Amino acid sequence: MKLHKILLIICRGGREVAVSTMSMKQQECAAGAGWFVKGEPAATRADDGLEIAYETLGPKGRTILLANGLGGRLYSWSPIVKDLAHDHRILTWDYRGMFGSGSPADPAHLEVPWHADDARAILDADGGGPAVLIGWSMGVQVALEFARRYPDRVAGLILINGTYGRPVQTAFQPLFRVPCMGKVLRELIAFTLQHPPVLDAAARICSARHLVEILGGTMAKIRGKPEIKAMYCQYSADVFGDDFENFLRLFQMIDAHSAIEDLPHLPHRALVMSGGFDMMTPAYQTRKIARTMPNARHVHFPWATHFVIIESTDKVIPLIRQFLDEAYPPQHPSHNAHCC
Image 1 (tube, one colour):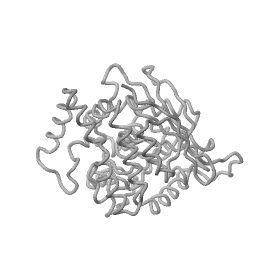
Image 2 (image 1 turned 90 degrees about the vertical axis):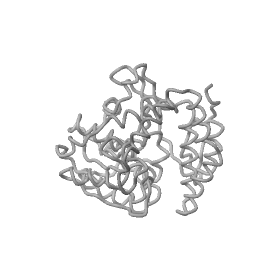
Image 3 (image 1 turned 90 degrees about the horizontal axis):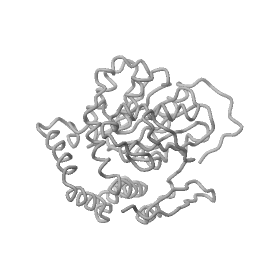
Image 4 (image 1 turned 45 degrees about the horizontal axis):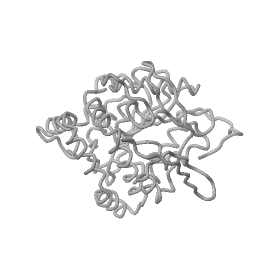
């Protein structure tokens, strides 16, 4: 059964900054999340006719295309968006099979190349030129695939907390590979998808309020950033609902994808960031991207986890700003510039 939806408007500093359709549980999450931002909703058709939902912020011009982590949405980029939306065009989208986008009848159409093609369709629909792609987690693989397929549409790559491919093989192995761990995780995902009662139980357990408190709340206290708990709460409300089955199928698809052979042939300037305590995409995978790409710079945050964007915002934003200034020629300030 679909979750009951309500409209929630979040205000900050007397200005409306976010309008979102949320469930009752999501409303509860958002109560402490005044930092979330929301763009203007839009939609376009993919090459296979599927509807792809996306959001836009900022004035036309210097374009940034945000490739989300698996299950992530615009709110996970909030610190970056708040800083950049007044002088950049920002686009992001719901991956096919998730949230506002359509779900393909053929599961093969969830493979990574389809997501890269969806990104191109969004750029076409928005009418923008080459974009700087910023990918986080799964979005790193999507960005690399996009750069391989559409090299002339890329002004630069910023790759955060991600790997070049097959993430299940190295997940939960932050320092070194553990024999058979990847195989166990793959079989666990497959077993869950094949048994609906297990799928439902897993969704209920992962979205339980006490688990949100333990994981999100504890990390928020350690880092001194309450927004971490709000983000984890929102993430669990989004993912462990109607789209949980496709969430796991997407895990299978990104684990079947690898861009390792393409990395030496991608000429684009790239900024690659990793976290020393990243359990999902270990830093040794991210370092390999930077070592293999010919024009990549690697920045490591030794005390960060999979959420460098939020945990190290004060360091990440200047790095991104510098990269963008180098990627795009100077422009006169836009008279219609506005921020979220």
